[in-house]
Length: 488
Ligand code: ADP
Image (tube, helix red, strand yellow):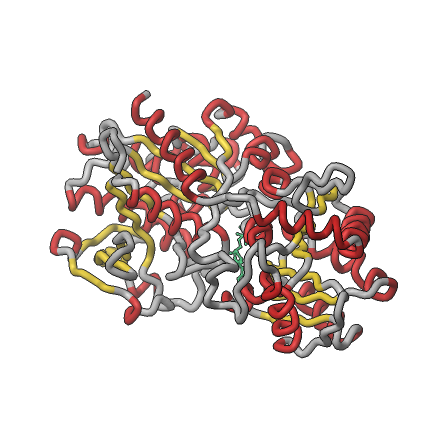
């Protein structure tokens, strides 16, 4: 328990592990909620009750104050209610927003009413506090989905004294997704008379940008690594928001995400066939053999295995893999396992690669968390040639699993992996800089040479396994920032 007064925090987000996840955002909201709760703060986390969430896995409690709620949205009255839930008796409780007419589609994102779905979430977070008479010290909002919350507090809910001292913190997990809509949505979301709070140039071009609006109005901006916090101030990575960010420069901090080592630890991971540790790596080789067999590939002693678990998108540098891998596979002896789905062109490429190099390339199209664990445990090298990577989690999992990360020096990859120098024995992975096929080719051939040097390999694996990126450390950084914000 903190020695000081606990904070009252309302956190609103579109995803949380294990209920709904498409990426790292879900891991962060779950871990941060658990961390802050364990520290004794009063955290009210709200997310949609998507129809894909299995009710049976939850303990659900009806909250009388949160029944029969309604909001004028999209020219109609949208009815909703909120329940309290928890996954197990030890874990923190959270709130689930029920609105079957909006959250029963198969996908979390997309669709014509996407803005309505997330505005309901945003405003429901505020109205939940009102109903519970919960006076938050701060709202912690995430990505574009809830980024309009500060503007709603300054307009639609400005009358409510409950929020007089409430601050807002917007965390940007990925600036590539901004929630840009035609400004004809302003009426349906109830902001048609609040255009003074919106970007005038966007309005001139008949559009509204949810994330930019949050960047302009939140009291504090955070993003998920120190390097990314610097990168997004420039045009290459800012994706059009660099000016808005530069205007709030003093309010932007980068905090690397933490890892949930309860879920990602080779010493006791129930999802891998053989557990192992830094002092006894025998299980790692057995995992390699097992995952290769599972994916129908040959096991050859001393043939390095490269793994990838990723959304298959432009962001993740798949085009470099497409350009560099075929030749590298022809000229060098290594295998590759890929788990992911995404852009059809990327999927087609990995299907082709699998046919071209039978027995050496395995591609599993889809989302499969247990398989992600087995690939982490069984691979020798984990590849992340990202064009940009706000934080990235897999490279940190890889370090713990003794799977040497091969990364491009960008965002959180640059902050969490240091290039290994065989002369000094310092470093935890292979880091390349140029985003082109030569860069990745250099990275892969460097990793192959390193693998062939048994002494150096042992050292780089060991160095990585000693690293600790736990939430205990990263959560504390959030807590300090929150305290400072509330105090100021
Ligand atoms: P991003 O949020 O950009 O997708 P991160 O590295 O921050 O990237 O987080 C990705 C998370 O999603 C990791 O926990 C990773 O293991 C998981 N993941 C990504 N793709 C898959 C997949 N196809 N199957 C299982 N897990 C996946």
